[in-house]
Length: 168
Image (tube, rainbow, N blue to C red; front, side, top):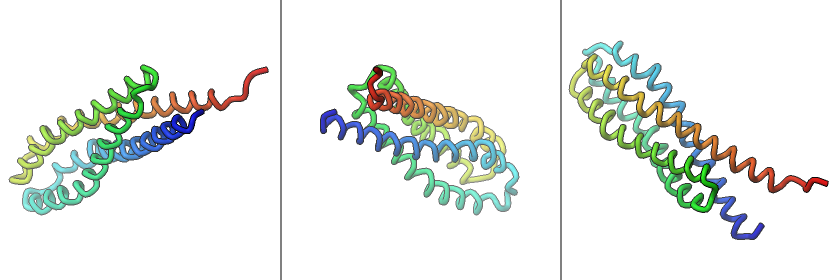
């Protein structure tokens, strides 16, 4: 293996690891939000709503924004790094990158406007739309995680094959 090839392989491994970690964190977070946090919003009393929602938006953004930014940057770099990879790996990486865009568009186009509405008043109907609309992100992040695991598996099995001793 050439030095350039080893360097590229290391870069792919590092960026894939960053992608797996950031996406894995977001998967855990989105499932918790989807199944626990958002449904519990209906239990907040209208009198406590404004203070609660403001605090929620401030604290959740500190967690989600850096992870989404890291995930997006890693996705873009990974698309570039695997341009010479096998078709299944390239297809999985490109699809996973498209899912990052799906999550950003859903966040900006669905979740943020609904949270803006909720910032004005407690509204159970808007909370229900928040829960329903969030399934897009939940599915997209879960699918992205599966695709990244597939890429890791393909690259690890290729590497293991390359490192295996020759058969007699």
